[in-house]
Amino acid sequence: MSFSQEILQWYHKNKRELPWRNTIEPYNIWLSEIILQQTRVVQGIPYYLKFLDAFPTVRHLAKAPEEKILKLWQGLGYYSRARNLHATAKMVVNEHNGTFPNTYVGLKSLKGVGDYTASAIASICFNIPEPVVDGNVYRVLARYFGVGIPINSSEGIKHFKELARKVMNEEQIRDYNQGIMEFGAIQCAPKKPYCMLCPLQESCVALKDNKVDVLPIKLNKTKTRRRYFNYLVFLDGQKNTLLEQRKGKGIWQNLYQFPLLESEKELQVEEFEQILMEENRLPRYRSFSMYNETPIVHKLSHQHLYTRFWIVETKKLLPDGISWEQIMEFPVPVLIADFIQTFKI
DNA sequence: AAGGCGGGGGT
DNA sequence: ACCCCAGCCTT
Image 1 (tube, rainbow, N blue to C red):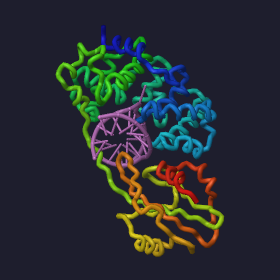
Image 2 (image 1 turned 120 degrees about the horizontal axis):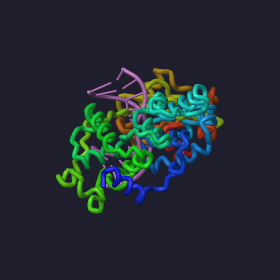
Image 3 (image 1 turned 90 degrees about the vertical axis):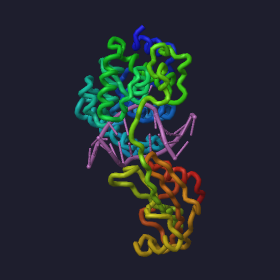
Image 4 (image 1 turned 30 degrees about the horizontal axis):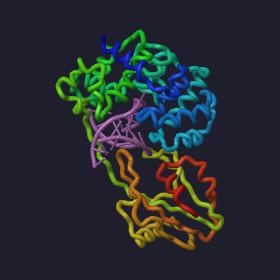
C-alpha cells in the first residue's frame, strides 16, 4: 500500500472527534486554523467553541470591537492572530460580500493566512489538491523518507513542500491532509513515537537507520533576553486604578496593563522611588509599597520578564480611574490577569 | 534569511 | 533548561 493510503487508513481508524471536524464551512475552518497556529489542539478547542458562540458568522465577527475579540483571545498568545482575524473578517464582509475566497491564491491574500493555512482551508473546504506542511508534516516526512535537510532553511521549506505534493492523495486531499497531521501529532510524535506499532514501520527510513530521535533537523536556537518590568498599581479612595494600552511594535500589542516602568536591572525601593520622582510619575500618595519581594518570572519564547508590582495608594481620586470590577473587561496579558486574580484589595 | 511574536505542556 | 505546538509577518 502506498504512503498516502496508509495515512488515510490510519486516519480513519484513529482520528479524534474535534469540533471543527463536523463541518467544511469556510468561516469555521478558517477560525479553527488561525486558532491552531503554533497552538496545541487541546488548548485551542475551548477558544474555538467560545468564538463560535460569540460570533456565529463572519459578519458577527466583523462588526465586533477589536477589544472584545482580544478579550476572548486572552491567554492564547500571539495576539497578532486576533488582530488579523478581525481585519480579515472585515475584508471578507466588505470586499467579498461575506463569502470566503475559494482558491489557494485568494485565501493566501487574507491577513494572517500564509502558505499552510491557505492550503488547509483550500483542501478541507473546497477539496483543492494542495498539500499542507505544518510541524507535524515536517516530522512525518523527514522521518519516513529520511530527509536531513533542516526544516527551517529556505531549501528545507521548498523541499518538504515539493515532497509533500509528490506523495499526497489528490482524490481524498481533505482527509489526507488532516490525516498526515493527525498521524504526526499522535503516532509519529516528537518524543517517544510509537514506532513498534506503526503501520509504516516496514518502510520508514529513520526507523531503519536509527535516526528517529534526530529527525527532523531544525536550526536556530532562539536566545532569550531578560527584561525588568515594574508595574504601578494605583489605588485611590474609591478603589479605582489605572490601565494603559500597549502600543508600538513589541509584545502584547493593543493589550492593556498597569502603568509600566521598565528598567535595565532589578531596582531597590529607594532607587525606584527616585526614578519615579525624577520622571514625575508619582502623584501624592498615602502609601507606596512593593507587592512582591521576589520578582515574578514570566517566560515567553524569547523573553524572560522579571516583574515587580508596586502598590500606590493615592491621596486624590485618579482622573480616568477604572474600578476594580471594570478591569476584568479589558484584554490583558496572562501576567497581568494572574496578578489581578491573586491581588486582594 | 533572520528575528519577533505567547502561553502551556512534556521531558 | 530545552523542545514543541494544524505559522505568519516584518525587516
